[in-house]
Amino acid sequence: MPISVRASDPEILAALDARQYQRLDAKLNGLQKDYESGRLDEISLRNAFAPFYHLTPQQIATMQDWVKSSPNSYAAHLGWGIFLRRAALDAQGGQRIAELSSEKLESRTRLLEAAKPELQRARALTAKPMLAIFHLMGVSLFQGDQVASRTLANEANKIDPKNRLVRDRYMVTLTPRWGGSYPAMRSFIAASRAEGLDTEGIRHLEAIMYDDMGHSAMEAGDRAEAYKYFRMALDLDARIGGSFREDYLMTSNAYICGQDRDAKYCR
Image (cartoon, rainbow, N blue to C red; front, side, top):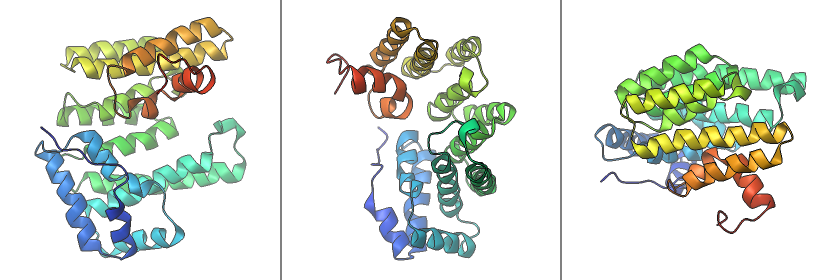
């Protein structure tokens, strides 16, 4: 049975603050090896690098020093690339692209371009770079590069045909708001089923689609249709568990639990 890792492990940032680069490499590269050997699941690997999502100015400087002093460190390049990609998300601040000031748009673009080579370097430094691919797809998603997203999805599926981490993110790239369509999403679900993705993995993909269909219906002013899809998404989530709702069903959760407090769905 694969082991799991919490997303709030204080050891990572404590080691970074102490500039203990060898300790960081031993911990994080060790977890990567655990993933590659099947001892650690992909979500736990993602969680292990979550401390790099937000860093203080001092920690940013230390990260840059770690990358510079350890050019062949998978963990250093991946951690730094993750921070830069998340910083691009923070620069956007939840606004639509058309709503961003020129300064915010320039910052977002610069951070995404800086993240890409770090994540690509990490991808080249380990045998099964699933997490680097996952975050590279975060870059291609934000840049609207559907060709790159498809290429990354194919690469991830060769590493692990039954992966959920990258398949879930690729499903997001297929939503209409990111240039995709619901027929494309349904086709990907069918293809994933044909490739042997398990029942829970299919539930992930269907729930992501229903959440977005609810979003589209709400934007079109059809509240009844929207809530139908939100409940379909949350019904699937009840059979999935974990952090999936927080990761992918934010819209369904916001309306059903943030506004209506439906006891059937709200924790």
